Amino acid sequence: MSVDRSVARQGITDALPLFVPAIPFGLVIGLAITEAGMNPLAGWSSSWLIFAGAAQLTLITLLGGGVALAAAISTALVVNARHLMYSVALTPAFQRQPRWFRWLGPYLLIDQVFALVTMRPEEDPDRFRTYYLAAGATFWVLWPAVVALGLLIGPVVPDEWNLGFAIPILFIGLLVVGTETWPEVVAALTGAAVTYLVASLPNRTGLLVGSVAGVTAGTIVERLRRG
Image (cartoon, rainbow, N blue to C red; front, side, top):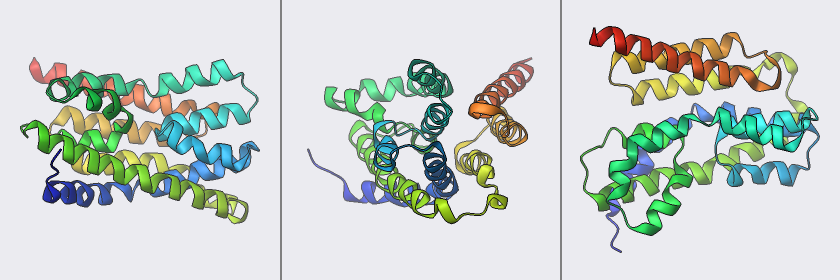
């Protein structure tokens, strides 16, 4: 399989700015692992095993709060349900890919990767695959490193720093590069605002509330626009 290095470099270059808003989110997860009293290695390894920040944070928080494993996993799956919409949107592109990619590619399908690849919808299959893998691998390498940093600095971070703002910042980062229509803008802004306002809800349910609010707002605006 030939690899277009210029496309791969572009995928990495495009992914790096979107990783910046994810840094405080990764630090929050590292802090959450510390606060949950989990084995640090086990908590850190979830960065690769789950590779979905919101679901990872939800699962860690719930398990740290003594919630049953089955209930924690179910809640994390609900939080990550938006990936079903991502999968539907990318079905045409994935249908043109080899079988190995159709099986392994979804593992790298996070919010930022989806935002990037949807900006390149007309690319031929080889270029799409190269770009997708390069962007996804960038996050896959950097994300565990930031979570590990959160584990290291967790014990010395003052409570008043309030890193709970990290998730709304991530929403805004996606808004900058991943939205092209008013419904998408409204959905992203609503999701960020609501998530921030309800960040204090127990068991990270604010993530779910913010996601639902964003999708609902975007859907309403889309229907109004169509008349």
